[in-house]
Structures are given as C-alpha cells and as structure tokens.
Image (tube, rainbow, N blue to C red; front, side, top):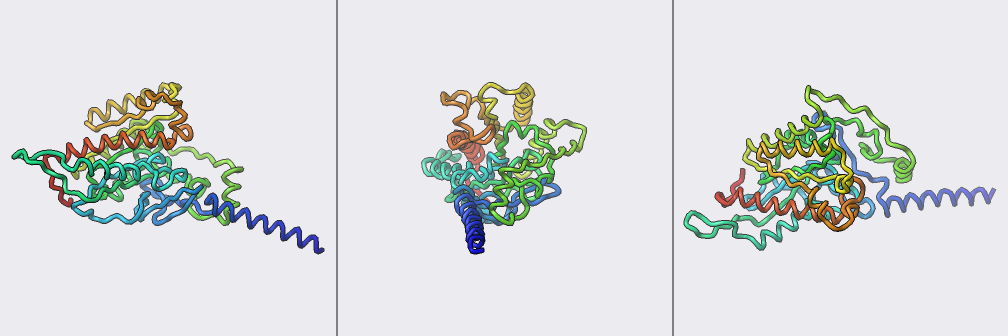
Length: 340
C-alpha cells in the first residue's frame, strides 16, 4: 500500500511540475481570448495581457495590440498613425510587444522626426515645423482578418482620429471570406475562455486537429476577390470623408518569393494594383523587394506566410518611407496641426 501511495505521489507531482513548466516557461493555459461579433466577425477580447514563449502580448480596451491607453481625442501635438491588418500586423504570440511592426514603426518614426523636424517652408519662404512631441502607431489587427473585417472594425470603432491609416494586407487576404465567427470557441487557436489547465491546452494543440468549417457564402453577386477590393475602396471612402489619407501595403507569400506562385494569385495582385491606381491609393508592394534580396527567401519568413524578424524589418522600413512621404504631402501646406 505504501508503494501505491508513493507511486501516486510521483504521478501527481509530475503532473504538477509539467503544468508549472508549461505555464511559466511557455505560457500555455493563458491564451489570448477572442470575442465573436456579428459585424466584424471576431476580434481580440479587450484588456488582456499574457506571455507566450517568452513574448509579451498586450491588448487594449479597443482590442488593439497597444501598450498603455490612448487619449481620445489625441493631443494636438500628437502624430497618430493607425496600422490595421491581420496576423502579420498583429505579430501573434511569436512576436514580442516591442518587436511588432507597429512598435518598430513608432520607434523609427520618432527617430526620423527627431532628425527632420523642419518639413517645409511657409508662403514667405520661412521654415515651418510640424508641432508634434509624441508619435503613436496604433495596431488594430487580428489573425486571419481580411479587408471586410477591417472595414467593419473601422465602422464600429472609427479611426481614432489618426492622421494616416496604413492598411497592411497579404496576398491571402485578397481571398478572405466574409466576416464570420465560426472558429471562435471551437478552434483551440481561437478560444473564447481559458482552458482548465495548461496541459489540456498543450494536448489539444499538439494532438487534436482543428475542426474544419464550410465557409459562409458570399452575401452578394460579386466574387470573393472583388468583394475584398470593394471593401478596400470603402475603407478609403470612409477615411476620405474625414480627411484621413491611407496607404496600402501588400506582403507576399513565401511561395511567391520563390517564384512558385499560382496564376490566380498573380491575377489577383494585378487587379488590386489596377484598382488602387484608379483610386489613387498609394500601394507598397513588398514582393519585388523580397525577390531582389540575395538571402534565401525562407530567411524572410517564419512559415509560409508570416514574416521573420528580418522580414518584419524590411516591411517596417518600407512603411516608414511611405509614411514620411504621406506626412510631408499632407502637412506641407498645412503645418499647424489641429484636433479633428
């Protein structure tokens, strides 16, 4: 009998130790939670913070991946950029809060502005300075969002009186389904409540396949590609009505960089380029930049779609250039910033 109790104690102790290691070392048992929404489809639950595989992730009250609380309205001396997108913008659990594209942009823009405070000249040829002392890059994003999710988010929450909006999309987003909440609470990667134990979450993620769902039909007569292009146009219309410019940034899939693209992806990209050109939406296409690099394409990705630290660095640099051009164009003739 004594041996039985010893054996049970060893089993219980081992389970407790495994639970502790999974929680403290890897963050299992404390995943980010999602909310199902009728209009947006889903969004990250507000006001949560966790650490996964050593990476800190914080979500604010507007379901954005931001540190701290944002002021509404922003101070007149704040330059606010809104980055909106999917998991590439969000960074996911594999990216620390300080290493997201938005956080990197905020740091780089602060450095850029520190070197370039004079951005133009007035009517009398005297230098004028854009009077800001704070730069914010907000991050409204969630895994697998497409343009229609992002449009619905902007309709619900607004643009937070941003001076510029960056729409970061991926080739896959051109084929994103209409907003839906089929995965929320049904897939382990989209939980709506905490698991009962870290071990349970680990086992579910490692050994149980994610359920598959039939995608909802398109609500209108147009196809999925056109519906997403229309959504991008509606995002521009929404922002333009309030005098807010936007820039679109398109990231590729690994197979596109490796020249293993599919014909329908090439056609979709061409149609998008024509669409944004007709609407005078600046487009930063990352694909040629990635293809021009001498490094192995796989070095730019952590998987088939998400970017590595090197890939994020290149994208951040390109967005920074697009932002500085847009900022200069917007405020060159109107350097005095006023609260909207």
